[in-house]
Amino acid sequence: MGDYRLQHSTQATNLADILERVLDKGIVIAGDINISLVGVELLSIRVRLLVASVDKAMQIGINWWESDPYLSGRTHQLEAENKQLQERIALLESRLPA
Image 1 (cartoon, rainbow, N blue to C red):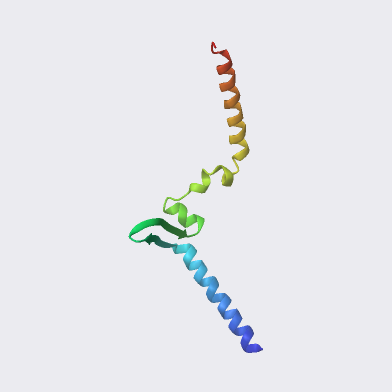
Image 2 (image 1 turned 90 degrees about the vertical axis):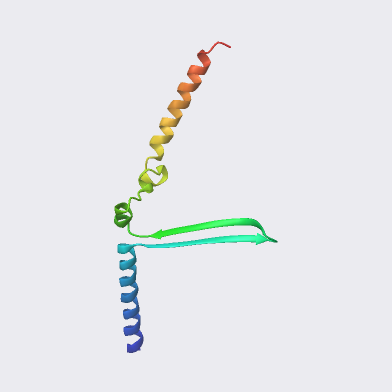
């Protein structure tokens, strides 16, 4: 039993070290999948994956989550602004001669 615990602890430490390095340095995985039948391309999929910490992503200029309303917490603000604009448009359109 002692061997198992020591081995499990070492594996967990190695995994933590690997994860820390990947998040610190970042890793890019890229690949293309093409499905063809009789020389005719039916489907093409491009896969690009970046695994990095938020700090590292920001260092290399990636910060899309800051402007994404569903991730930045601005959803309610944007919905309210959208509703106000729709009401203003409806009011302006109601004033146009028929």
